[in-house]
Image 1 (tube, one colour):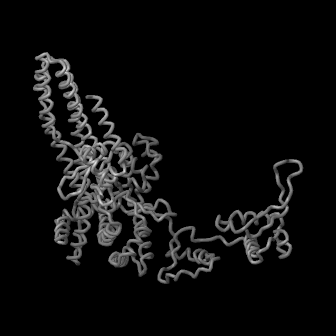
Image 2 (image 1 turned 180 degrees about the vertical axis):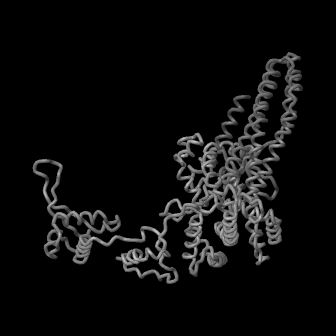
Image 3 (image 1 turned 135 degrees about the vertical axis):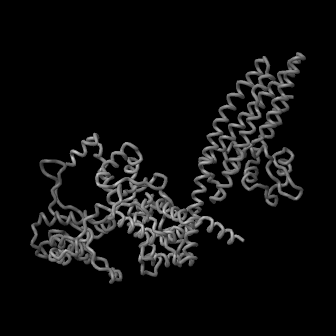
Length: 406
Length: 223
């Protein structure tokens, strides 16, 4: 018999594997798209108890057990369900324990063994289920019911979770260990199963559930607060719309000012230019005169905000007058752009009869090139001309540089 | 003189390291996790807060907090005539700012399709927001209206300019920070949470029942 069971189990799993695509499609969409599916396959899956048709004219769906297997295996938060029905589990456990005791007393050891195996399965399944339910609850708490979109939906989900927690807790109260102890009496196996294992698990779970409950309440409070804030804002707009002349009362005129409105005046302010101080007028005028805007791009001055008066606020508003050497280097760059040809820096210096020392000129050209932004730099190529130092290797003496458009 | 005061508190170097924080408080800034995490952490620690409080008390200042103790600012320890005047004008300022700020908050919430209004730490992506506002005439209208309030003072009729000005002003006022100047991402600060508390205070003290009114209005809309 057991080899039969083994074979049919393997057959079932193979079938699941063979039709994995179909099964997952159904899992994700809820029902089979019968128009596009192979009728033979569907028939086979239905006969194997993988698919079923809950309603005459409804679609084919996955059976609960297959769905549960997938949910567990995929850790799919969305579909996990909590089984809060502790009562029936308890009844089953008690019944099986009775069967076992009866079989033992009749010395029917093979039956007793079978009942004990069944009972252990049930107890373990029950505790696993309980722990699983708690894990699901934690999962929901930790992602703050992220699988539903709106705050109202989150609040509803939270309330559902709270009712499940209370149900679980009430269910756990059904377990009377004195009663289980009596059932187990002095049979070692039963005591181990019903008293030790169950008791430990249940006390752990009860504790954890109360933590879960506290966290759920806390979350609910936060959701409500968020909802409250939205309403507060909307309410404020509504109110001020309906009462256009409304002004808040003077809440700071009372003898005792609410802490909320007790805000001290700023003591340390940023340094600002005092435009009203006449004794500084001369310096200010000079500074203003020195300000100039540098605009190489042909950008039309953004429609000058005529109404804003000149405000001298920060140091970056001022600029140091340009160095004429730098200016000449810029002209050199422009000349290269205009000619589009390779141009030696020294030749340019001689051609234009510029007054600069050749070394500082080359320095400035290199500096000007390095100082360009990456974007602009990529337009040019600069090649140093010279020779390696005759004595000290690794040093390169630059005699001249050439610049061209890349 | 001040040396004597320092050693008088028995902490010696206790305030070293918190100088910048005290300065920020005295400059009238709000300290929250977003604007100054180190300072916020320091103020959360009772021992440090006690020391800062002792120091501030010498110049008639105190550390005040709002938003369930998540936002700190500087208040007066004792209120005299002059201090009352300051508080009164601050109160007027905040009352005048309430309507534009609330309109802005509602606009951001609706335009970004969010369930929750902005709160400390929430990011606003300006370009995304701008896209949504430009697409929807009703949002454009709301933005146009609120940008003209004196608080923002925009004279532009163009969404881009209006929005940039509004956000610039909100950064200046301390309601938003912009952690990276290269990016158009703004983060709401604890000062916004302070604002909610102000509205709630007014609502509760004047019995305006704002939440209830908003709720009935939404229900009516649903019907």
